[in-house]
Length: 170
Image (cartoon, rainbow, N blue to C red; front, side, top):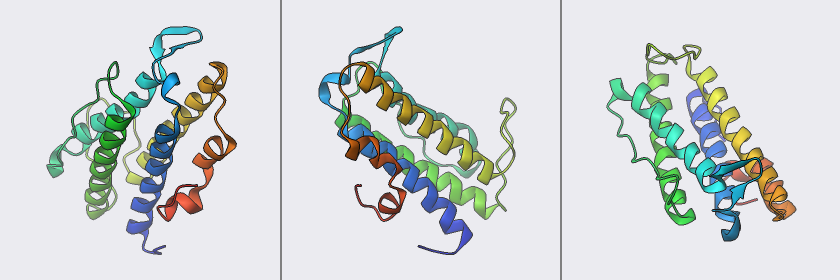
């Protein structure tokens, strides 16, 4: 682990992203398209795809001044787990590039008219991590409600940041 603040912020994001990819990769195939309790028009596939698509939206809007390539959005109605894992890798890298570019500018985010974000990369990283953690927890809970309780190694694995930070599966 680096003690350089710039590298630490980027590494923190990579760890968060690995937690999301780990969960998506461990989901049982049968839950991917099931209708959700109380939300019959939504599926776990749609929630998981939303994570990638939100990353793309932030890269598009905040990465524009840095000419960061925006990954293609996922079709939340059709994306397969394998396709989404590849897409999550692409969007994680694009967010890492955004973080690096912002840090090179003193840690400030570019201004965008409609954003309610605080103007710095540390607040943005906190927001991104909280957003992803919220939806990871939602997916774990929904699997349980659908009768597909995930093994403890998966449900608790998303919190094994020391292993995830080393690039290891929990």
